[in-house]
Image (tube, rainbow, N blue to C red; front, side):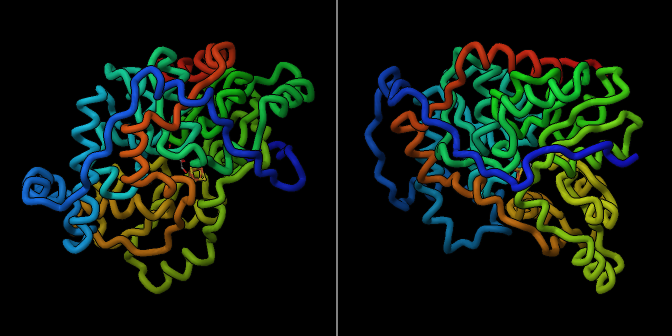
Length: 366
Ligand code: 13P
Ligand code: SF4
């Protein structure tokens, strides 16, 4: 059924990026380490050869001598610092395949964050993912290589907006997409990701829920469930740009192509797709079905990462870059580990309430 109502600001707001935490406290606790020499030596070539083998069909040999010294230094520093790197599926191939300890969609990364044994988590993704890792690990140090790696969805709504929604729709529970700040999660009954949104909405046993902030994910959930949805007017600046018309044209020119879309896309895009799912579900779909040609209607690096694993599948455009995800680079990850920045903190009272909403999702029995 269609969503009941879409509420929110008339003009999409772009809230300021996340505030910086107390200056240099992680640096004071752990100290800085000297910058390594970043040279393409025989030792670096030998010790990174197995990593280059993973991405050789998406990264040309001429580029590897620039990446390899960083990869080598980052992997050594992770051991020295007792750090792990969690990387989202949208990270570039050299990060995703060569320095990450765990990769996945938002749900997998949140689950992984509950199991981390290391002292330090470096989140290669966007700020809300790092905040989720911190909320789940209040005693660990969480770093993000660039504090400006935000998200148009997370910036579309504030905690105050959720409180006003509750006043306007008394008694209606709030399901919040994880692409939000900890402050917004703290005002919510439960969080969800794109891989479990329908299940989380239905888990509350209510006939109506407020679903924030992605209007398109809300529409997708409404199309899959009998629960009535009140949506918020947020959207992903990467996925909202795809159109059903461009996919129809691709299909017309290539009737065999498989089209796989993320549920943050508008409804006409989802209607044109053969399959819709979270980034992890999209990858699984391609792994299972091995189409000859496929369009991954999402962020561009994901096609590169799946291509690295499945050289026989041809990935056809379009895709769109997420400027926030692309702020994370090998030089910034190295700087993060050397100088313990940028530390992600969440005010303890907010973290405690946000943790309740996130854990309710993570530990929900299906
Ligand atoms: P996934 O949880 O599907 O990885 O989505 C995260 C995201 O930011 C998509 O744009
Ligand atoms: Fe946010 Fe969209 Fe980028 Fe995902 S792709 S992080 S939803 S802006």
